[in-house]
Length: 94
Image (cartoon, rainbow, N blue to C red; front, side):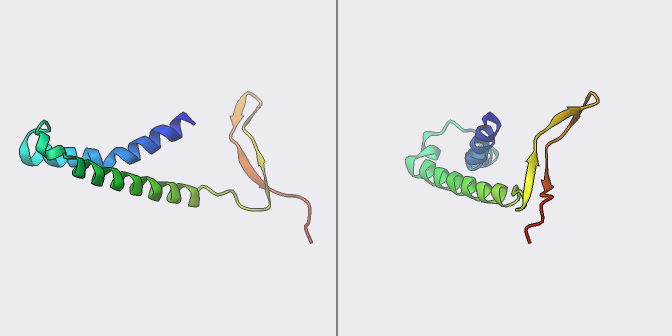
């Protein structure tokens, strides 16, 4: 769960980092108060929320377990870790 929160926070902060990098490259400083007005921070927050929603949609779209399967958690066989996987059900539905 912690990894998910860290990834979400990083995705949200990408617009702020990009704006800070742009300020540093074009003006040579990040400390000018006029560059960090409430309106600018609001736009960056909206952009961060939009990128976070886009990342959530992409991650959930590509991390789907196919229907009709059974999840087998990771376990140890012969001293080796076997990763978790989804196996098709052996029962014939039809």
